[in-house]
Amino acid sequence: MLRARAALLDSVREFFAARHVLEVETPLLCSAGVTDPAIEPLIVERGSSLHSPHYLQTSPEYAMKRLLAAGSGPIYQLTKAFRDGEAGVRHNPEFTLLEWYRPDHDYHQLMREVAELVCSCLGEKPVQYITYRDLFLAELGLDPLTASLADLRLRAQQELDLGSLDGDKDLWLDLLMSHLIEPRLAARGLCFVYDYPASQAALSNIVEKDGQLLGQRFELYVDGLELANGYSELTDPAEQRRRFQADNARRRDTGLDEKPVDDRLLAALEAGMPQCSGVALGFDRLLMLLTGSEDIRQVLAFDWARI
Amino acid sequence: MANYSTNELRSGIKVMLDGEPCSILDNEFVKPGKGQAFNRVKLRNLNSGRVWERTFKSGESLEGADVMDRTMEYLYTDGEFWYFMEPDTFEQYQADEKAVGDTHLWLKEQERCEVTLYNDSPLSVAPPNFVELEITETDPGLKGDTAQGGSKPATLSTGAVVKVPLFLSQGEIIRVDTRTGEYQGRASKS
Image 1 (cartoon, one colour):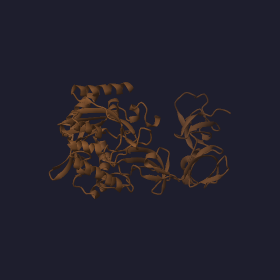
Image 2 (tube, chains in turn orange, purple):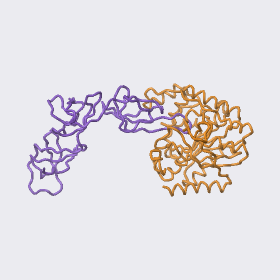
Image 3 (cartoon, helix red, strand yellow):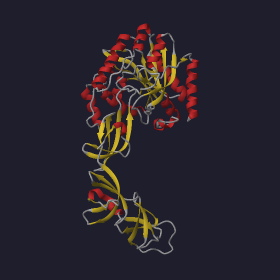
Image 4 (cartoon, chains in turn green, brown):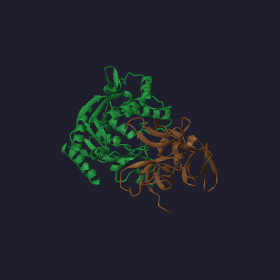
């Protein structure tokens, strides 16, 4: 397994070297955390070099965007990221991410490059592109953009035992996606799901299409395993600031602590970040797919319980 | 009782769910990269034995159930209840038919069993994996017929009926795997 990991790291680096994408490194410790209500960072509290608590990065996204704004051109990074409370057969609180950015690419071009990378690592597999809306229509007969919260909840409750589980529309969409749709992608090879509801746009650009607001975001599932998440990146600093504030408002509503906003990222966006697309890919999961491992612990030298 | 967060639920932990004591069998963490995290928890209802799967939001908490597994000595039955004793405290517990279930087929006096207590009364009883019991009734043994092949039913002192090789006869002590109800061999003479 150690050799398989080393070989996979080599093939990823060869893939980007051949395309003249620059490998970069950015700090693991950050002064600002992530505001995303669904992601909790680990915090480093003490040390004589720290004037305040710092966050272990949950992804290198903000730092890499600062490099893009500074004119780095296309860049990639293989790095560790940390997410508190995420442990299971597909999650380890410390994990390896492959993240890359392509100025002047839109998310469709980036999806094709992701497919090339994944097939170069795993061998040729069928590749399918489907919108989030069409996937829900095909698998559940529900339109995720127009269905009411009650419709989504009813469908979930018909098929699953949920007790008193409740939440907003996005919770029900996430539940249907992860519990009912994801298992059906198991035999499909690479399946790119794109054009997410605006409420799930995260840091992607939002556009209007047929009267609906959609995030130019995609997720890649490989044989049913969620492997990568990418965007046509949001470059507007005012909109970015609004999303940070909206995240923090949701954090407040759900009883989470608010997180400081990354002013350096906002400053970089104000200075001007080129139109670009970016994607984060779970490297450990890619190794799971390559080696046929069912549990992420099998592909780590030492998992969370053994550090 | 302690409360458990969904992230702490592991196989074997006992919790209350819908007013029923349950044992956790499996806990799967499900989280889209961007979005709500869930725990799909598989549990066994310790009252009914039913296994079910319930989805929770990650971070929710469940009340622990006052359920404990104790090793106890089986004493006797009066036909209605089965009586067990904690060897250290000599405290006795009576278990009803529902708690004992089919386990009564393997209960031999003075044998150690696992008794699961819920709010201090027996909820279920598990026999040892192997017990040695006397054959009380079977067709006469065929001397010398020790070759493989062929079996016959034998009734044991507890009332259990197991398949045994043809050469065994009444009065012999045999070893049985209680999980499968299969004959394992003659008990070693002590």
